[in-house]
Length: 360
Image 1 (cartoon, rainbow, N blue to C red):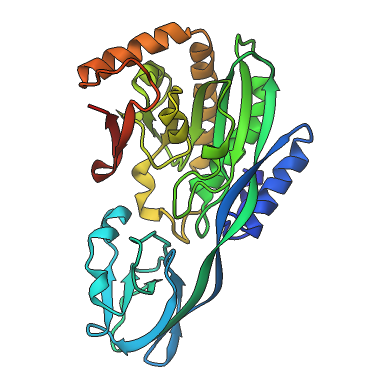
Image 2: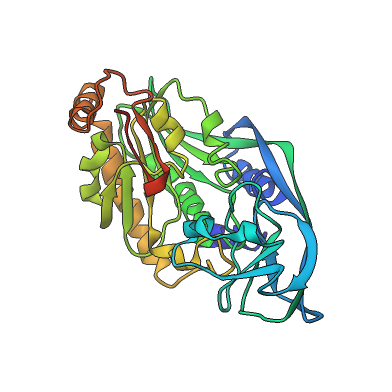
């Protein structure tokens, strides 16, 4: 687990920022035959973040992408909210009723994206009361980053394995472990015989005010299928893919099979009509986007099992024809009420249910 720990020690890798760039530079060093693909993105530059409760400085982080200063009494000008069971539920809280929103969870800090126009908001590692003085200075700036592509073998069309390198706070499982898995797999994949070409892509800017800025700018013309690794956590996976790839789930220890989530790097490919899969595990909700997303003893066995499963899935995918994938895709699409004949644009986000669905 050396590479993931090396990246962990660099600190928070905010999309488009200097730590993200350092991770990409290290991957370029490891793979000197790489290709760097320019990405236009945003960097959330945090200049200052501070919360004082009753004149005492407390541990806190600013919530993306809020900024500003205020003071007042907790429960009056300052709203205080306990972290809900699911991080995405923060958007349902009435934080606009206050000048400032404070979220808390015992012994934990998180960065969770709030709805646009939210007041200055912070996350604290404990419940507080009394008088609060808060201040953050942060801004989104346009910047340039890159995706790093490593070609494993040539082909007329390619299976792409991808993982994003940016992360909030510690980000070990979301997503440094995935980066390490793909970096280690190159040597293994070079030894297997495939009909298709194979590439590994390390994506910039999956996190951000808009998901997947890096992968959405990746060249897709010759992509046969995409397998993305994101937020992996011992000891199983959610198999989130276009229906034509569900048959590959037999190679993994599965929590559930679902339509492709719109919140990961495979989805821009899915929207372009390319077979797409992301493996993730929402068992990690307890450490999601937090400062306690750290290495676990179980990671070693989990990682090795995943690598074996991925090789088996890649071999079976490689032997499957484009015609067979299209036929299976359209079969499920028809059963779901889709009347078109093209894959591109047939699947749309279902944000209310945190998934996707076929266009009617």
